[in-house]
Length: 282
Figure 1 (cartoon, rainbow, N blue to C red):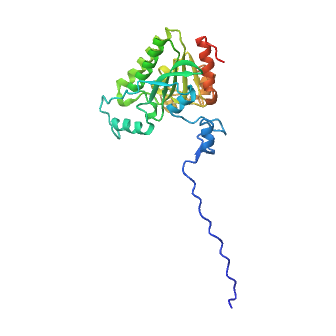
Figure 2: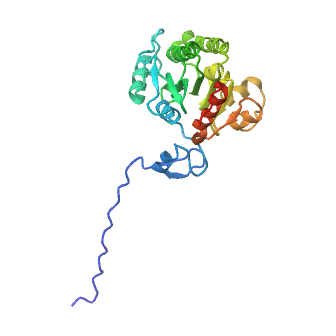
Figure 3: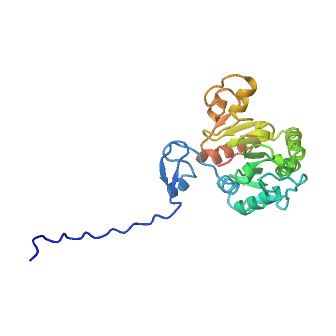
């Protein structure tokens, strides 16, 4: 007879596989949040109100009346005038971005109704090469502004961009002048241009049409500026204020008109369009 008692074997616990993408980490408060909870909250962190970036199509769906968006300039495609190549050719970058976003370029423009009020909407998508403004983005904005003039409609843009697209050289830089000129022509019609700034809005976009709105709205904590803080400090040889490129800092210093939470943005636009167009909504 054995002098010891055989130790009872404990059942081996099976590892539970957690599906990938079930959780998301907030870029602001660093909390780990259930992805469906974030999506249900319009991709806004329920802990700290951080606004995650959303695609142009998600933005349009959030703002406009159902089935009211009619896209214009869908077939426009960027060219490669310089045969530009860095790590990979520009043409390959365009192809990759088209597959990734299912968009032709970094802007979507078209007619839409918001609260029953007709408007022209131009939305940039940061997922497409950082929302950079090349010839097609500039053309779509100009096309939208000209259509707004022709039809006597308000113009709304939503910007989320890293700036001009260097791959197209001077063609890209000229879009700053083209879009700014189209805003000037649009103003002659005395219709409102509402510019919405999402995170981030930088470079040639912020230096042109994005900051030319009659009413400029930003989402909370959006980064807005021209160049990065390090470049500015090296240029002017001065220490910059903390958080000087946030929407809150810009509002405090009169650079923008209001900061609106994403869940309130559509209703804010309905009110503004009603006031400026002379229409009254229910």
